[in-house]
Image 1 (cartoon, rainbow, N blue to C red):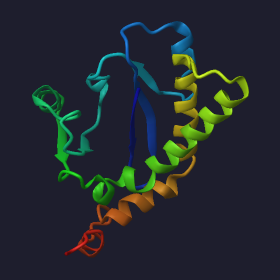
Image 2 (image 1 turned 60 degrees about the vertical axis):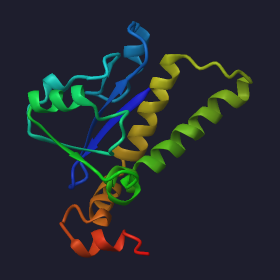
Image 3 (image 1 turned 135 degrees about the vertical axis):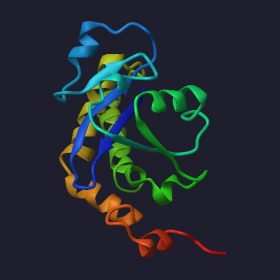
Length: 171
């Protein structure tokens, strides 16, 4: 599953888009979305057709995320695509710097809570959706100061060449 998260420099987080494997989504999967406004799809393009505001999409330069079709889709929907230098997301991607670590830690803890007591390694899609929503709420929605910190620490907002340079290691 892929969780698409977005936050602003003011700390506001929009509900997540969950991209799940497989074509079929059952009512129980959709009902597991516990964050109002969140969306779920089996289509890798997601729901970009519903965007109403200008969007800047910052992604790493991974070939798993950026291909000709993804670039064409961004152009088609007016999305400004910014790709970071290869192997640099831990330096400049504000979500990686401040939010995804707590998100991943929360998912890990929720998985342990669920799997250890029942001694069963099988997890249903519905359970994963529930855990992803809980972790997203705890790491992104409930902690707007973390998003603000991420933008500031990366030097993205307020724009700071000093912060940008401080994250680089010169040899």
